[in-house]
View 1 (cartoon, rainbow, N blue to C red):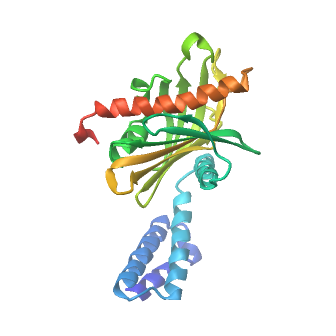
View 2: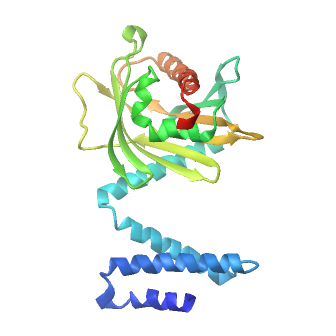
View 3: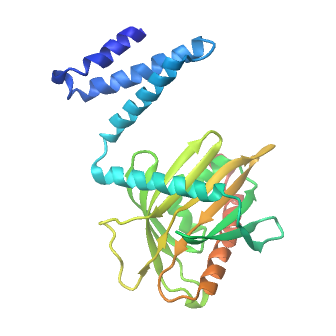
Length: 283
């Protein structure tokens, strides 16, 4: 079967077959299926199988790219960039300082990065399985304003493929209106890596959502949340939230730092409270 598959792949190289997108897709899928069979039927994949698997993966990704327009591909790449930058920041354990420590173990750390500024890192354990958190933070994203008082509204402006969305978020007014109305336009992507889920994002430009009168367009990113089952107890989830925001306007840095670290602590409390009232079957 594998030689026949390569004949199919070779066939699409002829000029008169260049535009047969469906044939290209079938070739890519067939190669992947046959190579997987080879992997499972032999003690270990040989060098050439690994090489071809990489090439077939590249071919598949290129075929998928053709489904999207130039603007859509730009947003997808921005989401990937936010994810990679966030993981790089979180991967560096040096230089983090404690901002807030709560009795229940929740903590907010911070560090200053040359090209980004001050970033905040929330680390908490939530007494719910990862699937529940993923459902609330990704699948029910637009409902976040119903349980998080710091969020007035989140609206999905555009979905791009299965992993990327463009969102408009309006922040709720702070007590005493210390921080005036702010909104964000962001590109967000979600990826699963084994038992870990990463939700990343950053600010972007979107023609369909220009700046609103009386509202300051703030910027965020790179930012991300990492969800993974707690070691030894998969019924609980370790949540890490990297927050990087430029609120714009004339605000003292001390005030901004206080607001952002408290926002993260409040988020964990509101999330727990909401999940405690969420039926288990909905997770």
